[in-house]
Length: 175
Image (cartoon, rainbow, N blue to C red; front, side, top):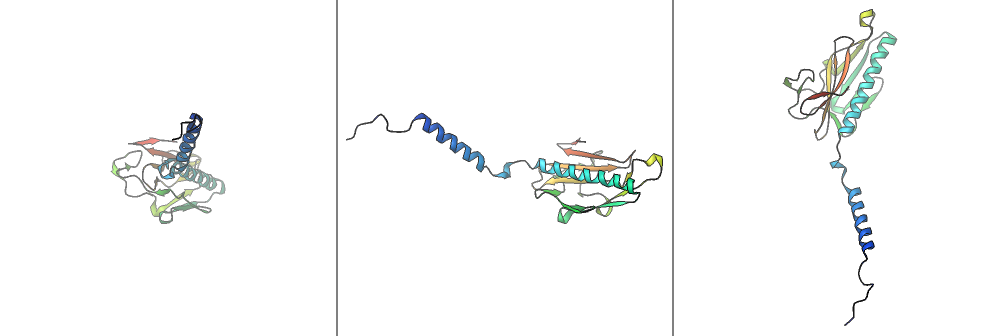
């Protein structure tokens, strides 16, 4: 029978290093499914808002109307060029969301409320309309799992305001 030697087995340092490597592998291998898609939805909302501001100003400068057209079946919209939404983002809302954000009384049935899914940006000639006009409506964006919802709205109040909202058990103004 062999006797026990002092260097048999693992040292504490070897065990700690092995456990640290295993934890690192687990951390890296966590599927991306568990990561929130909210940043992508918000990024797309901000991009759409920027396109709308651009078209509003372009209509004022060039003194002619411009149109932004939505293609929900292709998950895209087009003004000067077509932009396809991030793969994890789509037009739509979470279940049970009421709208519009300014007065949420009715369950939302459409992701895009503009007539013919088009926003028209009008030039203006009068001083009172010097901020430009946009047809009123709303567009709703969500992730594929429908865990978060954002809205971009235009109303025809003073100066045609573009507003961004986030739904979190009620609509909250983002900008």
